[in-house]
Length: 337
Image (cartoon, rainbow, N blue to C red; front, top):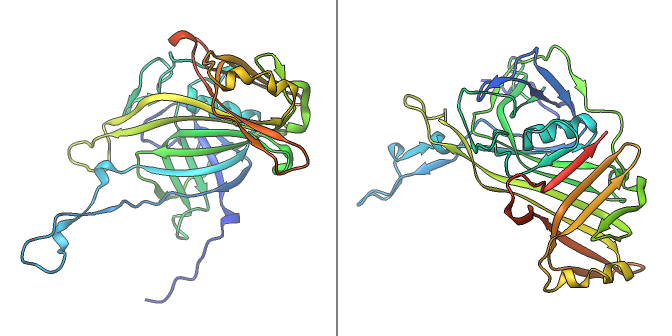
């Protein structure tokens, strides 16, 4: 057989997210809602699983064919995408991660994976939370031009701003997770909405835009990470690739870092760096467009001093928590407009 004449370029791949009501494990259709974020970088999943070999047989010097199996019953797929976090993209992110698509977006212990306090979803059940991630022109052949990945949940999302990266724009690094096999095929959305026309920018922070325990810090960069652990629930009889469903194991963690000029105001936080385990308020406020982050209770982890520049600055790692183990208290609230 002759060599194939086609090849793919990464730049030619267009990534869009399908949303709306769909059965878990079934891809959104062409007429669903489709959103095109501005993608900076990405990885792709493959319709492939790890090979598992059984124990070697006694008195045999090699491995044998019938000892090998692809473990589709335990398979999951993860891939990453870095996007400019414009307003519609932020809305889609919080819909997927927190089942909340109305600003201000609030994370509480009452949400759960399904948005109603439950931590599992059955395969085939109707849901509006996961996305279909469509890699247009991501298929391997001229007849299967796209890669379609159904039932995609955001396992982690990191929002970040850095004046030396992407012009200071708000960026979101996403790790996608699914327990459903990526499909090479063809899908053309009826219409696609762009993610927005402007993102928040670190250069548009107010003079008092970064506050920790009422101390205003000169912010030089920051990040905020939301993460959860997801797992597939077994496989259905008659097929080794279809799970019974998916579940969240453990809690949703909210962590981050503030990089700020080291000065009198950071010194005022000294008690919270050593020995004081009481939560303090943290807020970030940006304008044009509006973007705010509020954490009612944050605990500061071990701080570090950086003396490598023209002046000293410090990094304040933090963890956002609920007040007094309250199920309904806001751990995180985000406003985007």
